[in-house]
Length: 162
Image (tube, rainbow, N blue to C red; front, side, top):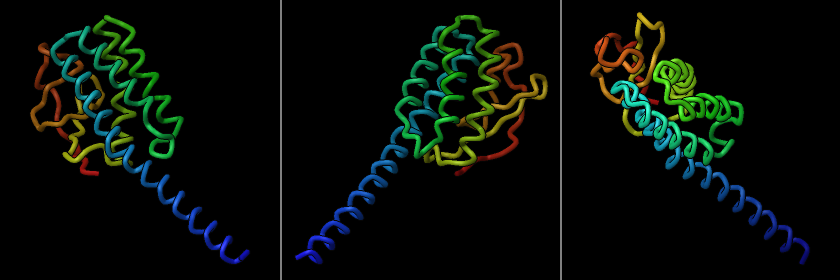
């Protein structure tokens, strides 16, 4: 009887561990693409010079980041992303939003190179005038740091397929 109980306990443990691993995978498959979509929303708003939309997209980014399991992205990385996006969501000053976006982009590029954020490639784009990079979902250059003043300033430095 003890052997049967032990075998059942082992199977239950293995099943539960497998179930938790699958939950983390499902979490990553749904929430990481939302994080990237919100990031692109911030970028597009900054390209257009729309501070209200940038702040709103940053708020969506914060919400998505808060829902990500620490097994998928480390707690420290999530806190860095939250700090950057939170600062963008709390101001309507375009210059400050763009400065904070440079920090957010650095962290997002690092993240994109370590985990799969979506099904489509992301393009790491660099602005030599700002000396900062950003992620784009398109090969067309639309600079979020200078907007219409220097819309096409930049070049793709890497395609991230991870």
